[in-house]
Length: 119
Image 1 (cartoon, rainbow, N blue to C red):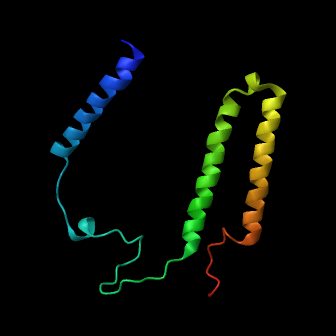
Image 2 (tube, rainbow, N blue to C red):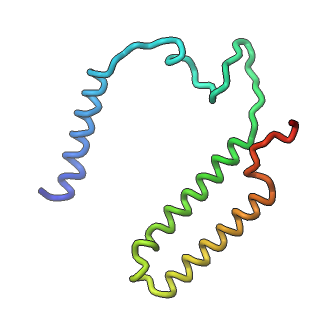
Image 3 (tube, rainbow, N blue to C red):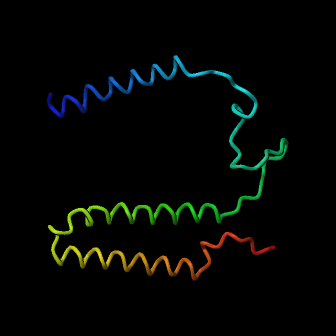
């Protein structure tokens, strides 16, 4: 069986069958907490449309995304380290050093500190 045939025909058919089985066989028991809007872990206050949103959660999510992508970009270098020679290794080290300096600056600026400054 050809790889292209497997990728473009068999995989979509299998995923469609599994999705249909899930829709048919999954238990459907809605209750109030399940069908309510997700409120990021806070109890919803009905009638109030504005809540205080702390930006620290957003900053931590962005920092996690950046450093998660760092690992994703360093993984091919780790796999092919014998093939990229000293030049590829030096480029990877420069990349890692720049990101480490950025991480140190983030710690120094207090962007990762989740403790409220008011308390």
